[in-house]
Each structure stands twice: as C-alpha cells, then as structure tokens.
Length: 130
Ligand SMILES: O=C(O)C(=O)C[C@]1(C(=O)O)C=C[C@@H](O)C=C1
Image (tube, rainbow, N blue to C red; front, side, top):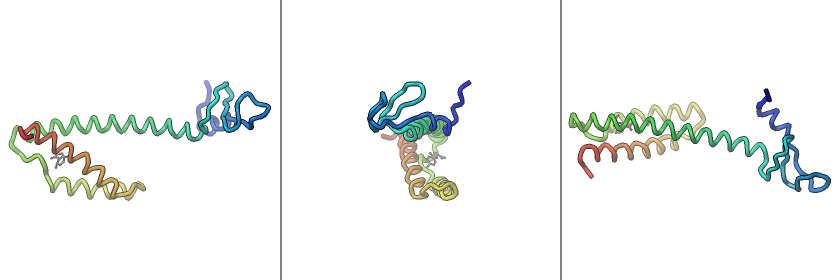
C-alpha cells in the first residue's frame, strides 16, 4: 500500500522551471502525473483545514442538539432562557483552555458568546417569545 505520510508526499512534487518539462513555470507536478498551480504544502494544509471545518460543523450540530433539549426542559419548568452565572463559569473555563492551547482567549470568549447568544434566542422562541 502506498505510504501517504506528508513528508513522503512532499518529496514527490516538482516545481516547473518553464523549460524542458511538461508543466509550466510556477506549476507543480506530482510523480503520478497531476499538475497544479497550488504549492503542495498549501494543498495539504487546505485539506486539513477542510477536515477541521467539517469537524467543527459536526461538533456545533451536536452542541445545538443538546441546547435544543435544554431549551425544551427550561421552557417546560419555567426557567429563564439565560443563566449569566453559568455563562461566567463557561467563559472563565474556555479562556483558561484557550490560554493553555495557544488560542487567543479573547477570541475564545467572543466565539462562545456568539454561540450562546444564538442558543438564548432559540430558548426564548421555545418559551413562546419572539
Ligand atoms: O446551560 C444552560 O442553562 C443553557 O441554556 C445552555 C447555555 C449554552 O449554550 O451553553 C445557553 C444559555 C445560558 O445562558 C447558558 C448556557
């Protein structure tokens, strides 16, 4: 079976010089005949970005499934849509996780707030609001 390790894939691309090759200057050619104007390192990184974006969409879909159930529960027992105390704890926790993992804590907080604002909107709708 062919090895698909990134370092091996990287070594199997050649940059066209514009003379004496079937591919043009600035183009990249692979051992198996593919030609691209995208540097292979960029193509490989974009492929990982696509996988990560797909995972993010799936994770968000699962989170919204949970919050839908939370919204139904809150509406059933008459609890308020928003819980500022819980949000404060989530922000503190995510900021610390972001800091530990090299992500900007301010960005992590803004991202969480963006999601929670949408969840609260859904909760209010479930509770019969606008
Ligand atoms: O945990 C709750 O009570 C929720 O409604 C979920 C959630 C969230 O999306 O994490 C949303 C709104 C609340 O203000 C706090 C948290």
